[in-house]
Image (cartoon, rainbow, N blue to C red):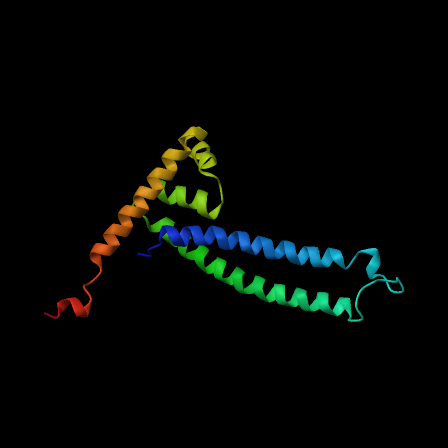
Length: 151
Protein backbone atom coordinates (compact mmCIF):
# COMPACT_ATOMS: atom_id res chain seq x y z
CA UNK A 1 0.00 0.00 0.00
CA UNK A 2 1.15 3.50 -0.80
CA UNK A 3 1.53 5.72 2.24
CA UNK A 4 0.92 9.46 2.00
CA UNK A 5 1.51 11.87 4.86
CA UNK A 6 -0.50 14.97 5.63
CA UNK A 7 2.62 16.98 4.77
CA UNK A 8 2.67 15.45 1.27
CA UNK A 9 -1.01 16.25 0.83
CA UNK A 10 -0.38 19.86 1.83
CA UNK A 11 2.71 19.99 -0.41
CA UNK A 12 0.50 18.93 -3.32
CA UNK A 13 -1.81 21.87 -2.69
CA UNK A 14 1.14 24.28 -2.49
CA UNK A 15 2.72 22.82 -5.61
CA UNK A 16 -0.56 23.19 -7.48
CA UNK A 17 -0.67 26.87 -6.48
CA UNK A 18 2.92 27.44 -7.59
CA UNK A 19 2.17 25.92 -11.02
CA UNK A 20 -0.77 28.30 -11.41
CA UNK A 21 1.43 31.25 -10.36
CA UNK A 22 4.08 30.38 -12.96
CA UNK A 23 1.38 30.11 -15.64
CA UNK A 24 0.16 33.58 -14.65
CA UNK A 25 3.72 34.96 -14.79
CA UNK A 26 4.15 33.58 -18.31
CA UNK A 27 0.85 35.18 -19.32
CA UNK A 28 1.94 38.55 -17.89
CA UNK A 29 5.20 38.42 -19.86
CA UNK A 30 3.26 37.62 -23.05
CA UNK A 31 0.82 40.44 -22.37
CA UNK A 32 3.65 42.90 -21.74
CA UNK A 33 4.97 42.23 -25.26
CA UNK A 34 1.70 43.53 -26.71
CA UNK A 35 1.93 46.98 -25.11
CA UNK A 36 2.39 50.03 -27.41
CA UNK A 37 5.89 50.74 -26.09
CA UNK A 38 7.05 47.49 -27.70
CA UNK A 39 6.16 48.60 -31.22
CA UNK A 40 9.18 49.39 -33.36
CA UNK A 41 10.09 53.07 -33.70
CA UNK A 42 8.48 54.11 -30.42
CA UNK A 43 10.89 56.15 -28.31
CA UNK A 44 11.42 54.64 -24.88
CA UNK A 45 13.55 55.34 -21.83
CA UNK A 46 14.65 51.69 -21.75
CA UNK A 47 18.29 50.65 -21.83
CA UNK A 48 19.83 49.71 -25.13
CA UNK A 49 19.45 45.94 -24.49
CA UNK A 50 16.93 44.08 -26.60
CA UNK A 51 13.74 43.87 -24.48
CA UNK A 52 12.17 41.22 -26.72
CA UNK A 53 15.17 38.95 -26.23
CA UNK A 54 15.01 39.43 -22.45
CA UNK A 55 11.33 38.55 -22.42
CA UNK A 56 11.92 35.49 -24.58
CA UNK A 57 14.64 34.28 -22.21
CA UNK A 58 12.37 34.91 -19.23
CA UNK A 59 9.58 32.90 -20.88
CA UNK A 60 12.01 30.04 -21.56
CA UNK A 61 13.13 30.04 -17.91
CA UNK A 62 9.54 30.09 -16.69
CA UNK A 63 8.53 27.29 -19.09
CA UNK A 64 11.38 25.08 -17.86
CA UNK A 65 10.36 25.67 -14.23
CA UNK A 66 6.71 25.08 -15.16
CA UNK A 67 7.57 21.78 -16.85
CA UNK A 68 9.61 20.62 -13.84
CA UNK A 69 6.90 21.50 -11.32
CA UNK A 70 4.11 20.12 -13.49
CA UNK A 71 5.90 16.78 -13.72
CA UNK A 72 6.38 16.77 -9.93
CA UNK A 73 2.71 17.69 -9.46
CA UNK A 74 1.51 14.90 -11.76
CA UNK A 75 3.65 12.31 -9.95
CA UNK A 76 2.37 13.39 -6.54
CA UNK A 77 -1.22 13.51 -7.80
CA UNK A 78 -0.87 9.95 -9.11
CA UNK A 79 0.43 8.77 -5.72
CA UNK A 80 -2.39 10.56 -3.88
CA UNK A 81 -5.01 9.08 -6.20
CA UNK A 82 -3.61 5.56 -5.68
CA UNK A 83 -3.51 6.12 -1.93
CA UNK A 84 -7.09 7.40 -1.87
CA UNK A 85 -8.27 4.32 -3.77
CA UNK A 86 -6.37 1.91 -1.51
CA UNK A 87 -7.50 3.24 1.89
CA UNK A 88 -9.72 0.81 3.76
CA UNK A 89 -12.40 3.46 4.30
CA UNK A 90 -13.99 4.56 0.98
CA UNK A 91 -15.41 7.72 2.55
CA UNK A 92 -11.94 8.86 3.62
CA UNK A 93 -10.64 8.18 0.10
CA UNK A 94 -13.44 10.28 -1.32
CA UNK A 95 -12.74 13.10 1.16
CA UNK A 96 -9.06 13.09 0.21
CA UNK A 97 -9.86 13.26 -3.51
CA UNK A 98 -12.40 16.06 -3.08
CA UNK A 99 -10.29 18.25 -0.81
CA UNK A 100 -6.72 17.68 -1.95
CA UNK A 101 -7.03 16.75 -5.62
CA UNK A 102 -10.11 18.71 -6.66
CA UNK A 103 -9.23 21.54 -4.30
CA UNK A 104 -12.63 21.91 -2.63
CA UNK A 105 -12.74 23.66 0.72
CA UNK A 106 -13.74 21.50 3.66
CA UNK A 107 -17.10 23.31 3.73
CA UNK A 108 -17.70 22.39 0.10
CA UNK A 109 -16.60 18.82 0.78
CA UNK A 110 -19.21 18.65 3.54
CA UNK A 111 -21.82 20.07 1.20
CA UNK A 112 -20.89 17.58 -1.54
CA UNK A 113 -20.91 14.52 0.71
CA UNK A 114 -23.65 15.36 3.19
CA UNK A 115 -25.53 18.23 1.54
CA UNK A 116 -24.58 20.46 4.47
CA UNK A 117 -21.51 22.76 4.46
CA UNK A 118 -21.53 22.70 8.28
CA UNK A 119 -20.36 19.08 8.06
CA UNK A 120 -17.07 20.26 6.52
CA UNK A 121 -15.35 20.29 9.91
CA UNK A 122 -16.46 16.71 10.52
CA UNK A 123 -14.95 15.74 7.15
CA UNK A 124 -11.67 17.48 8.00
CA UNK A 125 -11.48 15.91 11.46
CA UNK A 126 -12.28 12.42 10.14
CA UNK A 127 -9.62 12.71 7.44
CA UNK A 128 -6.99 14.03 9.85
CA UNK A 129 -7.76 11.31 12.41
CA UNK A 130 -7.46 8.65 9.74
CA UNK A 131 -4.13 10.05 8.52
CA UNK A 132 -2.81 10.35 12.09
CA UNK A 133 -3.84 6.78 12.91
CA UNK A 134 -2.25 5.53 9.70
CA UNK A 135 0.92 7.46 10.48
CA UNK A 136 1.09 5.93 13.98
CA UNK A 137 0.49 2.46 12.55
CA UNK A 138 3.24 3.04 9.99
CA UNK A 139 5.66 4.17 12.74
CA UNK A 140 4.91 1.04 14.80
CA UNK A 141 5.57 -1.24 11.84
CA UNK A 142 8.97 0.23 11.07
CA UNK A 143 11.79 -2.16 11.90
CA UNK A 144 14.16 -1.17 14.66
CA UNK A 145 17.35 0.48 13.52
CA UNK A 146 20.47 -1.71 13.55
CA UNK A 147 22.00 0.50 16.26
CA UNK A 148 19.12 -0.23 18.65
CA UNK A 149 19.94 -3.96 18.49
CA UNK A 150 23.50 -3.44 19.74
CA UNK A 151 23.81 -3.76 23.51
